[in-house]
Image 1 (cartoon, rainbow, N blue to C red):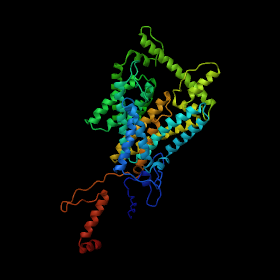
Image 2 (tube, rainbow, N blue to C red; image 1 turned 135 degrees about the vertical axis):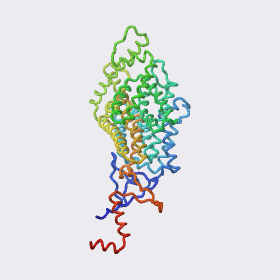
Image 3 (cartoon, helix red, strand yellow; image 1 turned 90 degrees about the vertical axis):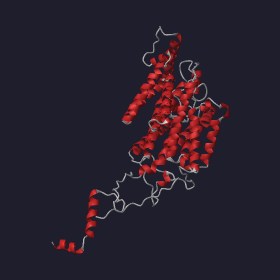
Image 4 (cartoon, rainbow, N blue to C red; image 1 turned 60 degrees about the vertical axis):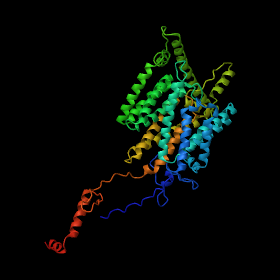
Length: 517
């Protein structure tokens, strides 16, 4: 039987994106096993190598933006210099001249985000207050969308995706330290005194979403490496800060995510996660103030004990009133959704519409947001916008999960890093999806950032994951005479090879005698 003709190898050009490398020698694209099919780059796109100065600079610019946005360092220091806006502007210019800007708009998540943006603009045109909705779209959402674009257009290699994930881990670690040092805990709850995280619940979401990246940093470090020791310290600080935010929604989200993490992780990760959680709960509970402990106890009992102090009783009453108010606002947001199912009342206009409706009835309604991201989108932008928003979440989570599953099955050492990065991303997306049940954060940059990191990782490894797995080859020991190695082959094939070689070395007379006998 003839040996099958080996397939023609496709040369791998350094710096060319996975979408371009996914074409065969005849120009036919190789079908990707990831959630999204590879997209051919525009002809004007210039390839960038992972080790080229240009690719490195682009990666560092994106990492700087992510660090600034999520460490909140410049909410505490050098606030007057507008460094976050300057860094984002410089990175946007780099994205414009990168040659990959059009490519970044061709991905499925990109199309969903563009569609969501169109719905926001149309909804703003029919808003109950057009000026407020337009300001929200231009000053908040466009900035969030820009973060997604710069990540996808400037991150073109899996090494850069891994570096960006580690940057996210360090930024959340810095946020944890800043929170512990500068948090305003007069009421027993931790929150930053100024900036984007003045609300303890928003701070709790940022910490919980960033925790998987710190766990990734810890698990990918050597046993006694400084990175492992520092990351463990940061995880402990994050846990203490998270518990001291007093966010009951974050605790519910953690309770939802924990079984998923345990069910989908290896035994080592399960044991490590359990030990970390026990340490965090033990240290955090010991440091609780009576008022904060009373707030968490409202989970189980909404009554106030007469023996408690005045401050503790006040905190308990506020917690119970907050829960009742949120339930009422949630029901009203569902009602507003049903009354305005197509375009809603306008982006960021739920509280305004609620106040105007109460004024018509001669009543006063407190200016409250929905405290639920999903009903925020449905009531302010309509049910179609909610469907698109959920599609972005589902697509991002599925893609990260699929990258982790496929890369963890590969024997290449580099795929271990890819699998760890994808695992951190999927758990972070899950944390965002669950914490968003208790917050109104639909237009913030957190979801576009996570989506951009997932899409960039996917398209940087699509070629490797679509190709057959390369297995290690067993090599025969060197020949004692010539010190040369024999190519490895199956046992039967090697025996046949030796037999043919021996027969060729036999004298012709001996072969004829064997044939006659």
